[in-house]
Length: 372
Image 1 (cartoon, helix red, strand yellow):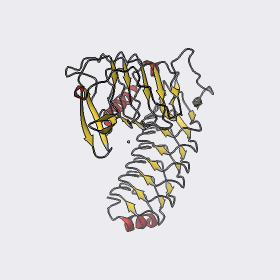
Image 2 (cartoon, rainbow, N blue to C red):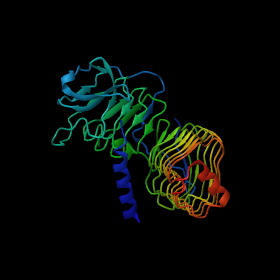
Image 3 (tube, rainbow, N blue to C red):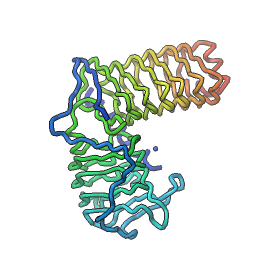
Image 4 (cartoon, rainbow, N blue to C red):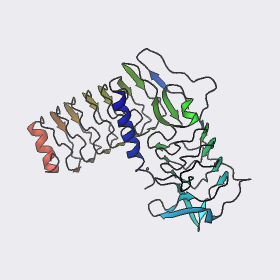
């Protein structure tokens, strides 16, 4: 089973790597043995600074534009840094190039590795306040990088952004809310020194670390706004049985609880506006789902193959049910869909052979291909 889980996890990481740059208090985890993980003495911790202050650029050498490869992103409205071509150990990323703001570091390739994929000599990096996104694999291979400070406008950190950054021990976060696509820090000194259980950075749950005991119940702390993509992906398959989400959370991220086969029920707070793709896919023991009244979109394959689910009521805040949202929910008998839903995508209820006639009629009246 561990081998299967490892294969699934590797597949998920590869999928995350394609999605970049194209989106205080301690953790509370009530485990099966009734214990709550506590911080390891002397463990490196992330600093969360809610003030708008950005890193000070004084004393950092200017790096000429010729030392960078870059492109303009119409979607982001600024410059995406794709490659650093020099070999300085202290690197100041410019806030503008050709008069346009630098908004993103990296796409899906390492920025600081050479063409032979040798380890980077970069020891320190200054990120300007213009940057809003850190792309997948952006700092991959920066083996001697020891600290990183994210300015207040960074709202997205891509998967494997800091893969092989084995000496990275200090992380300072000025932003209040950051969406993390997977665990960007899983190879870092900082992450390896975190205690088992929920790992939190700012207002984001990065991952559940370590072996999960049987019959684990997780309480996500108030103040958390995001759960990183894949944070609980396949958590020991059947060991996670209960999750309590706070009223502060706004998004259930991609594959956040995929393959959590022991999870039996979930209540989505009214604060959640989106359930992303595959958020609860293959949770085969899930029998009760309560959707909050703030929800707008149910994402692609969000509840795919939740075979234990027998009924679902869509709140009247929802306008769209995306592709394969309830695909092969073979036990689903009843679906209540309000007038607010104007779009049901192709295959949203494919393979739901147990649906009653009233549910079928309502679904097909919106999209005749919704069950195809």
